[in-house]
Length: 299
Image 1 (tube, one colour):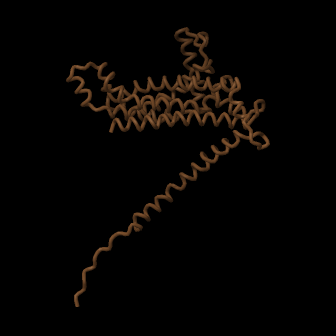
Image 2 (cartoon, rainbow, N blue to C red):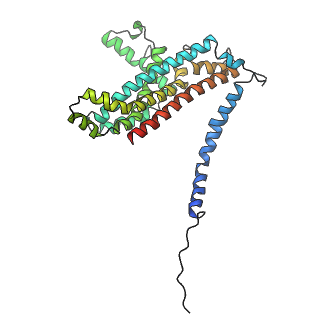
Image 3 (cartoon, rainbow, N blue to C red):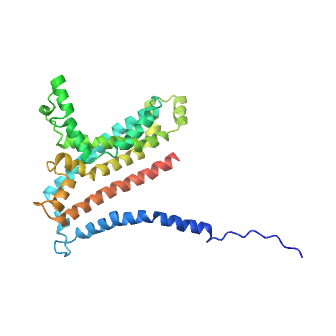
């Protein structure tokens, strides 16, 4: 009696792979629960509240309130501060990243810059506001050093940290490092062969950047600027801790509508938050669109 060799059984499509997928799915459940509890449900709550009055009745008065003069002024001021800090952060961040990637600097400088950028891009809120007050406030360290060493009274020139320029300068502290982190991979994607081909054809450095590098980089640069705009537009802790209520910007006015004693109208605050979601959503959508286009070009 001869026994037939056992043939290896074919793996079932519902075998280990399906079990592994099921196990992995359980691993991402906490993330989806976190997103549901702290992002989706609060967003849905304020969206519903934006169309209700204090008694829970449906109304469009809160949406009409967005077009009142003080609210429009707050949006315009927030847009100006966000756009200025995004543009300044993009320009200075690009120059820093370019120096680190193509500037032929010491090898240790790039990882140091990237590490610092990772830390500084997340340094915001009350600690950042306190740092700038201690540095450039009326009795700040730099203010007093300029006055004692060089007889320069910074505040006599009209500068104040509690102003449009002061808040923009503060935002630049985390906008520039964020730009460095975003644009460095795009600069790494520029191939050396492109520069060599330009040089072989007699192209100058200006012509290389004008006709080769910038057409490749512009989706990444513009997309990063949109992300910086959204990053500054939604910042509230830094602005509130630094300026209090001296600047009429959307996050501070929204906070006053929801938690304040004088401008207490939570439903109008929900409508203002809805407006912020629309603006930041559009800018983030533009960022993702340009990012995908940049990835296709560098592929």
